[in-house]
Structure formats: C-alpha cells, structure tokens
Length: 423
Image (cartoon, rainbow, N blue to C red; front, top):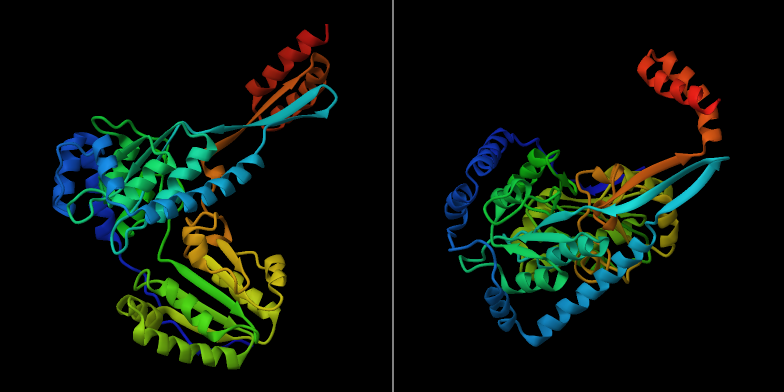
C-alpha cells in the first residue's frame, strides 16, 4: 500500500481563455500582415525591432567569436553524441517491399518532410541544448530546409551559444523572433520566410497554445507542459544523489513536478532531509524551493509491482530508476518519456549530452506517445502493385466487399478489371 510522506498540492485547472484569445489575435495578424505584425509584436513583447529579423553571416561570426574555445568544443561534443544516436535510429527506419500473396506486392517508403521549423526558447535559462535537439534531429532525418527561431537575449539578438548551436546543428535559415510570433511566421510565412511543414520546440503556455492553434496547417511535435521527474529507488539508493536529481528538475520552473517512489521508508525519510539541506545552499533555490514545496511528492510502496503501477499512472516525462535491479523496471514500466537506468545516469545527461532527445511528453502524454526523434520528420508512406492474375482474384472479393457497404462506384472500379482481365 502506498504511503505518502509528502504530497503535492492539487493543481487547479488554469483558465486559458485569455491566452487563447491573445494567441489567436497574434496569429491572425501575422497571417494577414506578415512582417509588419511580427515587428509590432516583437517590439511589444521583446523590445526588439532590427533592420532584418533574419540572422546574417556577420551575426554568426560575431556570436562564435564571443564564445570560449572550451564552450565551442563542448557544444560540438554534445552535438556529435546527439547526431550519432539519431543516425542509429534512422538506420532502423527502412524501406521495404514484400510479396504478401502470389502476385501482390506491398511496401513502404520513408520520405522526409521538405521543411521544418525549430523554436528554441529563451526565458529563464538559455536553452542551448534545445537547439541541438530540434535542429540536428531533422537534419539527420533528411529534411532539406531547416528554419530556426529564438528570441532576443536582453535586446541584443540570439544568445551567442544558442546561435552557434543552431548553425553547427545544420539550420539553413535563422531568425531572431520569439514567442507566438515565431511559431506563426514559421507556419504561415512572411516576407523572406517561406512556411515550413512541421514546427517543433518547447516554450511557455503561449507557445504551447500557438502550437495547438497552428496544428493542422502544419505538423507539430507535441504539446509540452512543465517538466517532470519520477525516481524509483530501493534500499541501495543514495539519498544525497536522489535529492540532487529531484532538485535538478525542480529548478526548471515553479510548476515543475517531482516524485520519489521508494521501496524503503528509511531511504525516503533520509532523502527528505537531504532535500531540505541541499535547498539551503542551492543557487536556484528560489525557483526549486517553490517547485518542490508545491509539487514534490515522496511515496513509500511495498513492492516492485506497486512501484511500476504507480509510475505508469504518473506517466512521467523523465523516469530515473536507482535500484539494484533496474532492468526489472526497464522490462515492466510502460509509460515514460525517457528512462535513466541506474545511479550512473541522470536526467541532466539526457537533457544535454548523452544522445537521446530531450523533447519528451509531459502531463501524462507518455501514455500514448514517445518523445521527439527522427521518425517525427519522415512520412511512412505505402505502395502496392499486383499482377493481372492477382488483381482478378482480389477484384472479385473486393467488388462484393464494396457492395456490402453500398459503395457501388467502388464496386464498379473492381468489376471493370474483372471484365478486362478475365478475357
């Protein structure tokens, strides 16, 4: 039976009526007025109105010159790891053609979308890694045109390390535009920017709502909410590390969620004490403390099966397993965005460097989808062909099947083949 040593407060449903209206107004304005509307909202929200929103080669060179050599090398290392894993995934998405019955051949082709748009948020932290994840992945998938947008940092253009990461990742066009207006121009275009086929990337509630509203006109990756971590631990886990990992996600946002499911009451209690101690000296305690205080949970369970059941109900974005038998949970857990197996791996590795993509489902969306990967940028299309002999056999059955549904013209398209091929 699950016993809660600490419970999260109830998260009340937020009234998004005003958000939806504001987003709709911005999108409609940009669809009608193009760059003039982008400039209006960019000045209003970001105090940013450059001569051109498109980033120039001089801007790129200037950004790289501002970066320490070690930082450039570290970015290159991270990108190499992410590119490598994406390439391994891509190898496993393959064309095939198979004879399913005599004379009938069916197949699939993997075709990349023509263009994608990556939104890299600014805000509280410069999310350099988001450029890696949302630019490299479509590049490996074979997308020929990649547009990237990011807001100005302190009114001085894109944060230099973010800009370098976009370029190094393979972006073809880069624009210094933030928020809803960035998503709208990627979806609908403006002077000097042709629309793309899919828009990806995280952001605040306005960005999430913009993705919801443009979906259908373009594809999107997923609708992300505040970040989440759930850790399953047993008596072998280290409370010091457990606390550090929970706080690592708590610093993202005051609305971030954290949960510890422990098979040991002793470890759970020690972790609670560690959390209090580490918060005292944490540089980002103002945000992490609020997040942990409001939305942190610690639960003690009696069995591995109960831990799996509770974890799958939670369906976390990030699932860490710090137990002696972590493979049990890898084999049995079904709802999570990405799993970090053993004490040796932490969410920060996946967020920044290890190679898996950090754009992951939140708010229990892991029940029905995984995270961003190369497969999001390709279309799996099918094809079929048949010999005349096989077509004759299929047509006879298909004509009857069509007529069962009163789809008589469909049936006729089968019948004409019977008449031609039976002669």
